[in-house]
Every structure is written in C-alpha cells, then in structure tokens.
Image 1 (tube, rainbow, N blue to C red):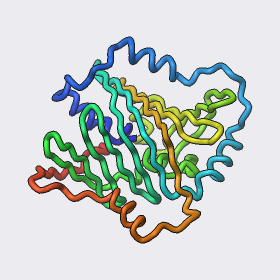
Image 2: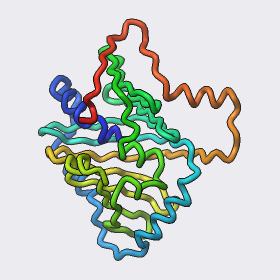
Image 3: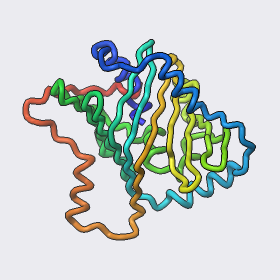
Amino acid sequence: MLLILLSSFLRAEQSSERSDYELTEKVFEKVVEQDNFEFGYSADLTKETLIQQLRKEYKDVQFFEADFVQKSKQSGLEAEQSGHIYTAKPKSIRWEFKTPTEQLFISDGASQWIYTPMTNQAIQSTDMSSHPAIGLLNDLSQIEDHFTVEIAAQNAESIDVSIKPHNADLSQQFESMQVKLSKEPLQIREFYLKDTMGGEFILSFSNIQFDRGAQELSEEAQKARASLFLFVPPEGTDVIKADTFNQ
C-alpha cells in the first residue's frame, strides 16, 4: 500500500536505481495474467453479505502484520520488492522493505518517514494516514467509507473486488483498483492497482496475523508495539523535509 503512497517516490527511485529492476517483460505479464481477477465463476456471495462479513471480522482488529511481495511495472521498468508490514489502529503503519534494497516507511498518525539505509537518507513529510489506502489496510471493516465496492469475480476459495475511491482527486489518479480476498478465513491477499500513467502494481500478502485485542498486552509489549511506529534518524542521517508525496 505503499503501493499507492509511494508510487511517485518509486518513479523517482527508478531513474537512479535501474539495476534493481530485474523482472523481464514475460515474467511480469505472466504474473498479471495469473492475477487478473478473471476466474469465470458465478457469484455466490453478494456485495451486501461481503460488507457485513468484513465489518464483523475486522471491527475489533487492533493490529495487523504480514509478509508482502510487491511487483511493479512503471515507465518500461519492472521490479519485485519484498518485506514485512505492520499496521495498528487508528492510523499507524510500518513497511519494512528487505529486498532488493532495504527501505523503511513509517507513519505514526502525526508524521511519516521514508528511510534508506544504503544512502543514509531520511525523508520526513506530513502524515498521510488519512489517505484511503491506509484506511483500507488499517481497517477493512470501513472499506465502504472510502471506496465504492463491486464484486468482480469469485470462486469457492476467493473473491475479487473492484474498488473506486470516493475522493474525486484520488479516483482520477488511478485507472483500476482491485482487491483479492480469501474466503476462509476472510483476509486480504492481493491488491492490484493501475494508475493513469500506465504504472501497474500487484501487492501480495502472506503469513497474516491479527490482534483483536481480546487479551490485554503487558506494559512491555505495549511499548514494544508502539516503538514500531516511531522513527528516530540514526546519527549522521541526511534528513530531508518534504510534503509532496501525496500530490
């Protein structure tokens, strides 16, 4: 979902790090073909039922974490990145990119950071956690608050949902947005995005874990979790302040 938030940032990175982009055209096309949300099964779950189930399953989720793989294609360049993601209600998110280049994105609900250890550079900007994409990851129970939802296709194991942001400016930036959900359990598995500049992104999740707050965390565990969404630049880091990543 950095998928959306960092699409403009990734375009800038591509011009200086072309060697990191190793996917071939055929490989990417095969991935898109496999994940194009066209299964050909007749619908067996209505939109209304899906929304009700999402509200029931996710209204109490306080914390989410998963491994992710992001495949992207922009301006003729292709890339695959992987790492780990954490989110916590109401607005905190942490993306740890591990391959091919280490990078960290953190938002604590007040400010956000993008840190690249290789260049020892950190970019700080105003918070973007109100962005609908962040809301989607933080709380699937509120998907209709930010998006128009339509079922695109489904089978016995998964359901594919086309979504369109209510925000007019955001909607104009993206040609297509789709979410793949597994049915048992009901979890987000993939996110597909095509922007109006021709960029395509597929974000896949695995090893998903939830905390519904059924048990109180110890004070030590609470501090450890809160620290995930705080960033203190290492000594000597080149800090750049910018407020343009959501434009």
